[in-house]
Amino acid sequence: MPTTPSDTMESTSAASPQPRIGNVRWTVCAMLFFATSINYMDRQVLGILAPVLQHSIGWTEQQYSYIVIAFQFSYAIGLILAGRLIDRIGTRLGYALIMGVWSISAMAHSLATTALGFGIARFFLGLGESGNFPAAVKTTAEWFPQRERSFATGIFNSGANIGAMIAPALVPIVTIRYGWHAAFFITGLFSAAWIVWWLTNYRTPANHKRLSPAEFAHINQDVPEQLAKIPWKRLLSFKQTWAYAAGKFFTDPIWWFYLYWLPKFLDGRFHLGLSHLGLPLIIIYNLSSIGSIGGGSIPMFLAKRGISVEKARYIAMLSMALCVLPVYFLGDVSNEWLAVGLLGLATAAHQGWSANLYTIVSDMFPREAVGAVTGIGGMAGSIGGVLFSAGVGWVLTHFHGYSILFAVSATAYLLALLIIKLIVPHFEKIPMDDLLPAE
Image (cartoon, rainbow, N blue to C red; front, side, top):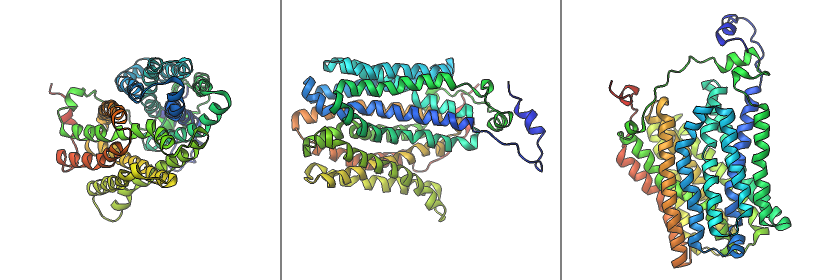
């Protein structure tokens, strides 16, 4: 076992040359990045193949919405269970287990022949995939000192955008050559291969043979945190929790709508076919990556110019909400690339909005409560996604068009921001003592 951080740090004075710190922790970060990329790739395959599957399987718009709901519902359940599972059995076995569930479920799509079969496969895929972010966040906490965690989190979280871009590039090629069954099976193999890589190479820092004493000390340089367990019931008594949950409830469903219905919309409106669907989707998700970085940097840019953090955050969120508005006109657009531009702007604004929405949790809560509040918000977003997906199926069945859906998508962010502002006019920070139950 490596030497303890205190032994190492006491023998190193400020004037002494620092020992070379290894890079094992960044290898772990790379594993988290690839896991997150696979996570988003696997969940997106259905949306890309939806136009093909709707013809070959013969499901209705309402049935397709139920298939999407199966994933969202189980994802909401999994957000509650996954964190406790990881805490109980550890990151090494826990991550492999959740990845195993979603790998088998992803490949099981290739065996489905009915809408019900796809719904069952999606349910178990959602259960498995819900564990990715709790496992990745806990692994980051184990392997990185506090000052490096946000950077490491940013790296592995960027895998979501990479996965969203790989899927539309890979899936059409595989499907055209080998059929849609192969597309589900091959993408599922990526997660199976990752499990082998993970179990072969991953250990906790205290048990990792390649970890040097210097890097072990670097990882454990912080004073050990004595984190109190804050019950959800206590958190739900604060208006700040409800403000964040409301923001997620109204805007997360829009991202799910883009993820699962954009390929169907583009194919139906512009008759692209599977061979021409990839490039528009890649452009849209590239723009969403730019929006995530750009929207997230607005408060920092404004703060440097003397604007308060609270005001800067509201300005950023209002800017992103306004950037979404042009998608209102998408239902009447007849030019393919204008549609791609409007969708790219809308998805970029969503990601910029989300970057700021996530951050208001740490603005209002001490770090001990951030994870729990984020989980509550994630569950609220999933519930909103279930309700909106059901509505999408109903609208498409009865109105046979997307105009109403794009109108809702355009205005959801302004509505969410208004509700947040009404609930919390100011992002008041809650003291830790107020969160702890009375003894």
